[in-house]
Image 1 (tube, rainbow, N blue to C red):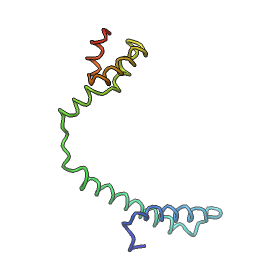
Image 2: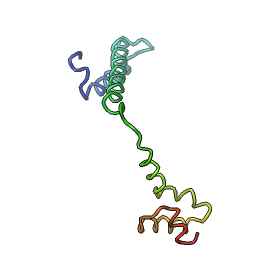
Image 3: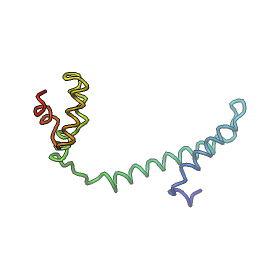
Image 4: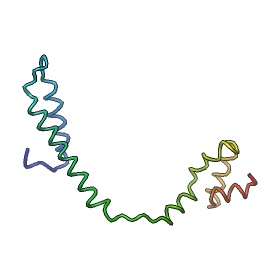
Length: 115
């Protein structure tokens, strides 16, 4: 198993070995406990390495574009659920539809429709 420490199927193999080893115990005497523990610890190592690789190669260096986040937030049609209790479902649906069709923010669509 040492030669296959970081291939894609290592986690699946470890899971299969752990499930099999766990199923072989009789009367709380399980001679497969060393296999179970070895494969469980190996899976933890794989997860540890994967998390560090994800941070090193995908997360580190990411910079938040605050202006873009604010733009997405202001123009998100999902926020219609926040105004629905105030103006009712039907009006909120109409606001979302108009905002989408006209390319407006929800605020601008509300003002345009007179809500």
